[in-house]
Image (tube, rainbow, N blue to C red; front, side, top):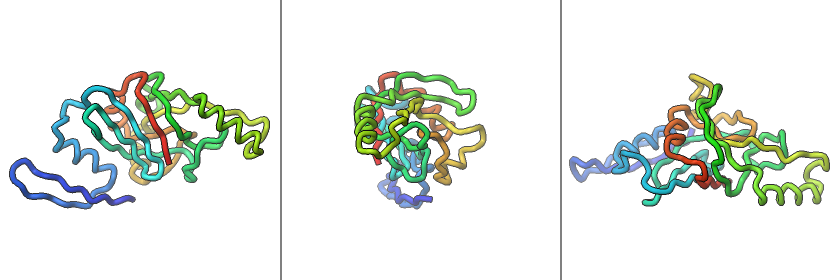
Length: 187
């Protein structure tokens, strides 16, 4: 489990509190002392950092919040083909949203993009993937099975290539991320 040092300034004095908290707690602490209590202001964008297991939300004023996430394959490699359980890297957009019967909320991404298709075709030409491989699809940001938020706390990668969040967190992001929201996924 990752420990992060968080400095929080209290409004009732000039003292600083330093504490070790897990990444999953960090967002709640930052938002509690944030002036952005009503939610993000203006346009929202999302940056997912696979190596840090984080989903960062930005608005017109800059960084808004950070949420812990997990992925598909433990290698954290870029998606090469359908069935490899890797999460794709690149720039995407949310294209649809729905309440999901298994995973609380689902925000579908426009994978594969033209860039994804170009990387896929180059890998085929170099022989990195079989010539009959398919690119895949159906990548999105979603929650976990009911009462299984612990997989996020334990950094247990379990999806087929999607990004998974705690259900409370995915409901929050679902509330302010719209169709068209830019999502960048990087390692």
